[in-house]
Length: 93
Image (cartoon, rainbow, N blue to C red; front, side):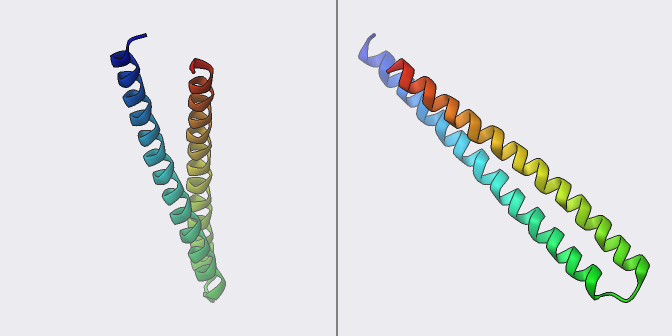
């Protein structure tokens, strides 16, 4: 392998790693935001005296829980992709 090829491959791998890190950070932020919103909606449901309003807040909390689960799944997929990339890097070396 030529030095130029190796430099190009290293650059490509670094770019891939940077992209995966950005994606993971975005999913972590989405997860934290959804969890915080769900907690806030549950607090609102607990503090209201109206049954219909409490139910509305709880439905909103369930929706935020689903968003959090989706973000966690995506974060897991990105983490798995990063690990797979590392394994392939070590095998190639």
